[in-house]
Length: 251
Image (cartoon, rainbow, N blue to C red):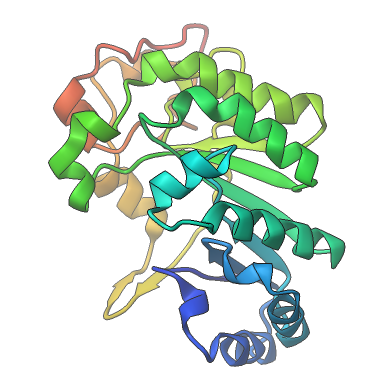
């Protein structure tokens, strides 16, 4: 069994090492920290989390250069901190799997981001298509790219990792958007998950994604990836329609 500490930003909690230690006492074998990665720039902090029982680290990197990443995070210096954090974790022998959110400002740079991540020695990376809720919804067309335009850049970014022998996956990118790279669609490999977020608990996150979060179109049942693909976040076709999603034949 595994547990993931996420957020928000979990490293803002001064008691995070204590919580990790408690998770280890409870018997969790995999303990992952999902973070913006900035605090991992402190090697001592990394060592404290590892000593407490953390086994995996998932920092977020959204650009291949400081000007892009820092602009997206609105935090000057965050790129250098996160990159230093990844280097610290790898030098400490940790399993590092990164996440990069795909938006209009960076989708063309997915191959560049992938090359940086491979050079840093990350064990796995993910391109997660932006979930257009909250403040994103108010600037939808300025933030959310068209998937058919982003597709070749996503494919190129995945190919960098696959050529280097690193697992490279996408999240919330439908099967049909990645011809020839369908095995990189990660949803079918996400384990059954319970999500506790403040006072809200989602008992079955897969059921939430399928029944509430994501949406399939009327032609999707004809696709050979129908069983594995969950479709995009529903806000995407509600705004842009299903025209881009052409079923992959040959079921």
